[in-house]
Amino acid sequence: MTRVDVDGVPVSPDHFINNERVSSVDTFEDRSPLDWSWKLADVSRGGPRDADLAVTAAEQAFPQWAALSHEQRSEYLHRLADLIDAHVTQIAHVETRDMAMLEESLRRRVISRGARNFRAYAELAAHYQPRRWDSNGTSNVVLRQPAGPTVVITPWNAPFMLSTWKCAPALAAGNTVVLKPAEWSPLSCSLLMDLVLEAGFPPGVFNLVQGLGEEVGSALVNDPRVRRISFTGSPETGRLIGEAAARNLVPFTAELGGKGPFLVFADADLEAAAEKAAVMYDDAGQVCLAGTRLLVDRQVAEEFTRHFRRATDRHVLGDSRDPATTLSPLIHPEHLERVSGFVERARSRGDRIVFGGRTRRPDGLWYEPTLIEPASNDSEVVQREIFGPVLTLQTFDGEEEAVALANSTAYGLSAVVYTSSRTRAERVGARLRAGTIWVNCFLVRDLSAPFGGIGISGIGREGGDYALDFYSDLTTLQIKEGTTHG
Image (cartoon, rainbow, N blue to C red; front, side, top):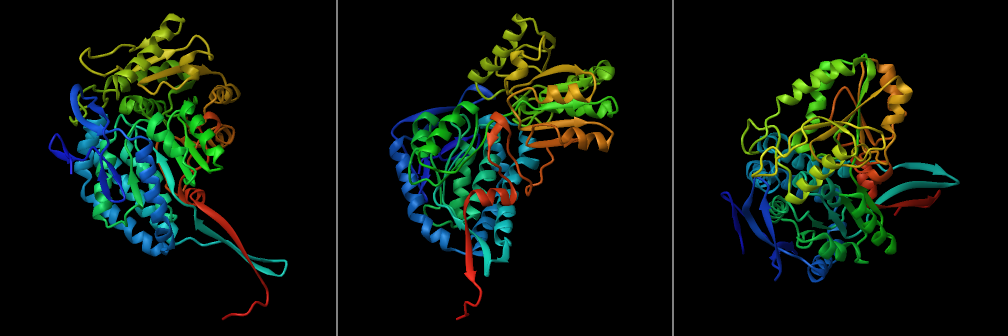
């Protein structure tokens, strides 16, 4: 079996199909954002043949996996969760080098979230209480039936955790899975497959195919044998996958990015709000849930900005392996060009660069924290997702204008509100177009809560029973009263 050494950790660069490693003739280079001259691996570049092998394996494994009880499947998921916990350090080590997320953060909270995902969905599936009622002389019960082979396509940011977030409920529901990670950061998902094998999963239940979206990804989502598709990425790619799903009448869920508002009212704890706003620069702003549009009551804007600048100045750009670093490099030279392009166009169109707006280190992919005051709410930096360490600052007068500005983009994934008033929090929260709204906090996740976007931020909901319902075919069983036992 081919293995590459990723700074001391052996990782397979090949697909994982039917519990075996499968290589492709063609490969693509995977380089480290920490040092772009550092090639981590030549990764198998899958195509239609590899997609067909993976879906065939999932299709053949499906009847046996679906026939297991929830309790039996949960045993596999719990074993996998235990193995993730036992390998947190190695997985964090590889993911840091592959996509540059802060290693300490990965090791302390993010990778272990993957284990939590498998445990949570194993328990939710095993303890499902179907709806039961009597009507029209019949007893009724809603059954969850496994749907079939499932394709999961995940993004390059936090690839390990986000893959488990989607794959765990699919497996718990009784589906078999083909996972395609992003080509910019594929290696930590390959480590997950090693643990799948060690956990004793039956062949074909959980498969991995590497490659480019337009090649192997397209082949996967267009396969008529696939019965569920889950995707996280850009709205542009989401539309293409949605078209493929529609042709085959396949249920499809997608999380497609955000442009979240961060509302600060005059009665808020301004220092706390500013400290949390500076957190939006974490992971170089490569977080879809980040509140990147700072909307501040005009009465307190000057004071808030002072606190915000002080909090931002404490960020340290550096090597993601160093615990002192708080701001990592961007994932890829193409992405650095995209982020800097937004800022340069904003500068040329009359938006005011309050601070930042430069590549900090000419020898790498670091971009300094940037704040822009747009000349108009129609400015590109307000209306489009940048996905980098670039925030905008606008002021408002009163709740009506605050809500109008917050809801003024096509996105609707998340929002953050800072206020000391519970009444205002509930009143404003009820009017915001966002799938998740945090008040006086950020990124607090309850795995049983629905998660997803409004508008071009996505379609469908994940999380808790919402995810298990999506990955299932719901059947109503009606039995006429008087039907005898035996």
